[in-house]
Length: 401
Image 1 (cartoon, helix red, strand yellow):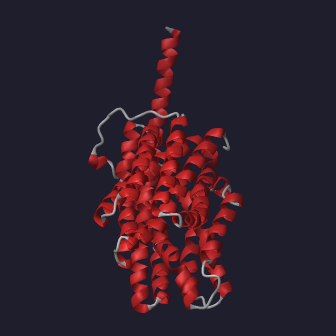
Image 2 (cartoon, helix red, strand yellow):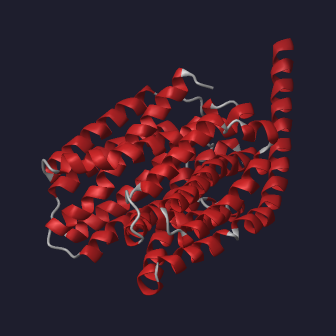
Image 3 (cartoon, helix red, strand yellow):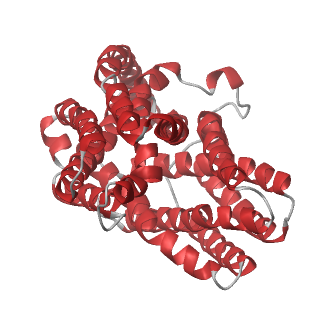
């Protein structure tokens, strides 16, 4: 599994996330510099996230049609232009427009890169491979905000130039990729086919689980300060370390014992973790909650993605990953807004108890929706097997002639 192709695409993903998560923590400060309010500073992330979420299936379908490598190259070049535009634009409205387009292209890039990576990973190690693939974003998110805010001290335009350089590296990396892929026969993207509703139904289990994720990333530090727990970042740090530990040492379990046997216990841990955060009054309680959440989420995402890939068309994998991006970003974006609103009105205890209650629906949603997806997967696999047999017979006939 750990081939040069895997390593190269992993580094490409790391640079991609490293660039984005330098921009996202710093741009609210830029918006404040332009004379806008704190509330408006939060608009950018919401618009960026929702643009990424709702365009992801469409952008994934586009990648399947024009070629995933081509989309990576195009998106990386456009990101160079966006980075410079962020440095030059001073009108808040134009910043939001650029953010929306950037978010849409971002989702296509992630869907296309994930689809390419899924071809590099042997099916027998798919769960472990996707888990390790996800560590690229985890490592970038753990380091990029601090670097971005440090560069921002030298000026906003300096940061934008650095982001443009990183986008140039992304473009160079995309040019070096040599995925074995074929484009779909039709060059026209049919809008009605962009959303795979059976996949989206299954990924709703991820949406309700990541609802609390959005609240954790935005407000766990505030909760720690309110409850006199130091350091404020203790929850996020423990959460990130738990994900890394699980994926490095235990992600192979999904390939050995089956994805569902890993997925169901992981989904059970998530509401327990949110309830623990809601009730935690001491440092050790927050640490236990973060470990449960990191372990649950670290196991759930690759297991869910593996199950979906097992039961969908390999030629439409960018669209499939687009649906997963939709579920993930919708849950995080909505959770950040709603938990913030509930926390402001009723307190964060009630907010995270709400997240715990909502995440309890992830198991029944998956149990209900996965049956239809698995049934279709059996049909798709049988059709593809028939096609392969027909192709082999035709080739054998041509050889004998």
